[in-house]
Length: 127
Image 1 (cartoon, rainbow, N blue to C red):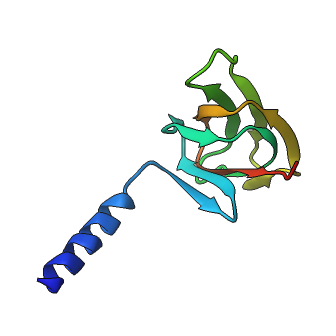
Image 2 (cartoon, rainbow, N blue to C red; image 1 turned 90 degrees about the horizontal axis):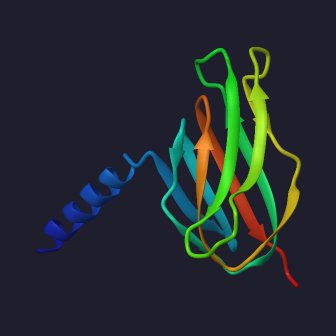
């Protein structure tokens, strides 16, 4: 019986790796990762101040735009442009300086345009 449970856990873990994006918690931060253009599934934020950090790569492309909009899914807050940069031929990889954003509590998703893999981290700040 235990062997069957172990097999189920391995299969679920294997299948979870095929998601086009992933979300996790790292020491209270919301970390979202993906590859290319996509809209993430929704995630909840408690509201208040957050420090946002990001990384993006051009992968095997010649470069392109990396844009991220934070979209509220449960209230009327307009979408918030978070990132709008170009990753050029000479920049294989870019990362941000930390940036402070003030957000209302609610449920959000990220709308991302990217040439390759990316990570966005939202770390809550103590009040």
